[in-house]
Length: 605
Image (cartoon, rainbow, N blue to C red; front, top):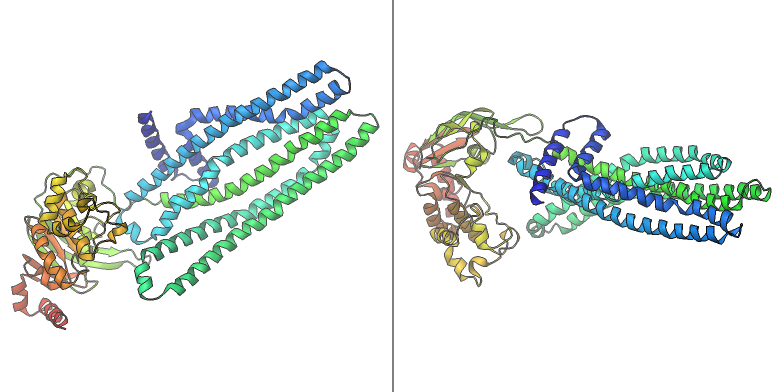
């Protein structure tokens, strides 16, 4: 069973991805919804069989009431009356059993389909390059996965059943009304044009309203995520009132968007109820006169009034389905917008797997420009640089000089606009990203930790790492001292983002995590900038152990951490202006000498 589920989900994801590129508006979306249900077609068929049986059971009372009154009670025929009573019981039991089966299967299929959709969205997000996240708010992406998928929940569960059940009930009721009495049926059908005009008007006006509700809730989720993530900065600057005001504005916009739909529903659905009451009164008057004149049997009028519920209730239910449909389609629009974003950095069709790396890095006349949504912003311009295997190269320069961009190009978070980045002589665009990342370690400016234990965070890059390897890595970078002082040691929970640890402790764990992964290429991006000078001196021994025997690219504003680097490369405006050892560059009294002088003055101050 598990094997079939995995295969089914994989086929579904491929089918959905392929259909996302089709054209056809609403029809395209409905085809994708059907693609979500396709792996469970057997249960879907069983669901519809149960739905038809339940509908038949629900339609039975009206004609049975006619037979009970006209052929049983009025004729004094006890046998006929008993048969009608038995038929009532049978229809009630059939309705109960079929509704149970239908409800269970709808829930089962709907939840599996949404499970597959969530997985598809998550896999799609995981496939996106770093640039994708730099251009989008995390809260909006979270809203796609939560609020918008939840909006689809009602669409693919309750609404699907209501759509088909109400349609069948309406068709069946029309047939029963025509069978009971043609004139009364035609009188009832006069209400059709009014209902049709009201329904079309409701559909046109509500479509845009439901789209605005999805946008409003997405904005609220994004702002909430951003505010909670930046709560320390918010508190430190005393900006709580301003954030409350801004959130209140977004909340008000959300209320107004939802009130538009509330007003539409409040106007439309009572109107349908009023039309139902008017039709019932008309039937009672006209039918009553017909009974008094002896033109029809009283049982026909009773059955007709009873059947009218099966005429107007489905119309109202279908209208309610449309509100859910609008909300679901608006959510689906947002999900499609996300799933339609193709990763702009993918493996080439003939990409090869990297073998064990020596670690030589070469940048050949590399230029790169960020897409700012308007004119491209040039970050590095015509850089050529070779880093021999095992050497430590430090990149220095003012903010915006291109240091982090070079690191991202080496890690292949971006591809160069011009030129090529090579590792051991192989163009990174010709090898698989996974084989590169398995042999690369990155320690960012902030040692990000995931919820879990200290041991789990150290072993994050190598899930198969043993406890001894985790402890050895912590010992090698000097993290074991503070870990073993904790009551639960390596089993200590770190809290969300590691907030229960100091900045220096988080950074030591980041060093240990990189060491466990045993990378051939190491990138340290301002790895000590968030700690004080005293802590930095304690981190330096861990850094030396981490970099030993590895090709390392070190980005640092604190020049004390890079004096022992094999080579220092000075960048300005995206170009290399100087390179050499620490002593050589000081003797040259150029750009590095000026940077070092300014840094020494700041450190002394």
